[in-house]
Image 1 (tube, rainbow, N blue to C red):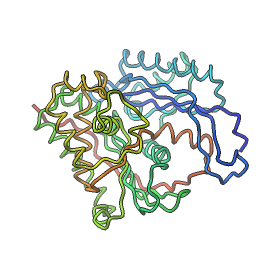
Image 2 (image 1 turned 90 degrees about the horizontal axis):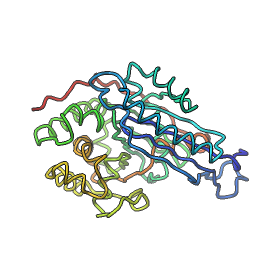
Image 3 (image 1 turned 60 degrees about the vertical axis):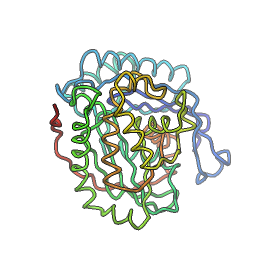
Image 4 (image 1 turned 30 degrees about the vertical axis):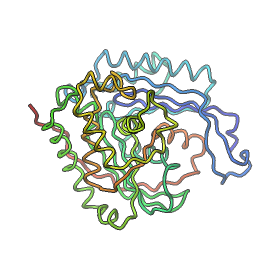
Amino acid sequence: MGSGGQVFAAIDLGTNNCRMLVAKPTSQDGGRNEAARTEFRVIDSFSRITRLGEGVSGSGRLSDDAMDRTIDALKCCADKMERRRVNASRQVATEACRRAVNCAEFLDRVTRETGLSLEIISAHEEATLALKGCAALLDFSMPYALIFDIGGGSTEVLFVHIGDQRHLAVQGCISLPMGVVTVAEDCGGGDLCGRTYQAVSERVQKLLEPFEAAHGIRDKIAAGVVQMIGTSGTVTTLGGLHLGLERYDRAAVDGLTLGFDSLHATSKALCGKTLQQRAAEPCIGWQRADLMLAGCAILEAICHMWPVGQLKVADRGLREGLLMDLIHPSMLQVEPGRMHAVPAYTPTAHS
């Protein structure tokens, strides 16, 4: 492929976070065999909570403060890319930019002030790229996989048929207009009372029912042929809490298997804590404390709808998928599946 000397970068601008990876390709045979398993070595990274989508669910617009915060973060990314002499990159934006009516204005500002060209991708492409990023965690002896990503502004679920290590077929994809930021804002902040928590979970389950009906996933779960992978800050944080980490450790969490009983117990314990107590948890902190219960409510709905019994935690996803496409686009073939329509988001009733 001739990519051995190149440096690649991927930027994922979400509703809540701005994240970047810079990487160089590696190959088990030094690149002599194009069909060899090709991976990458991360040489730099960046992550900052910018809350770009703050208030978008109510106003339909990106706020000036949110845009300023995000552009400052993107400037840091551009500086790192220049220092690392990146010569191939892709920068994508997701749900907040898909929703905001003033997104074109924001994209113009980004290009003018950082030199970066942001590309707004569809929910379907977002989910497919996350699948590619998580593929290394799949158990290829199992014929089916449910893969979900609880984001800031939306939640994507993929149902995948596994052919072999180079071929995956997406049976269906659904994007729910409910993420940790949108739900937390709708519910007046991060302290969801028990009734509101249950209402959020029931709303997510209702939105997932047509997807289940279309694919008969529960029957396949009963037959023992479905695995589940969760990629999101909610799931990785629960993984860190389960392990009792004093400081979040990606190496310890990525690939961790968690039983549903453990997930439920940890989520229930968080529901019993105040915002200040959640913020004091080493793997949460103040920047995530107000979002955790929203994420747990969405996760509970997914686990209730599809009782696989356990899931594998993925601290990887969209950025890794972008890098895979940039470095070796032919390594993993993904057949696209049907995108399932979801009703427009309406705020959850709460008091």
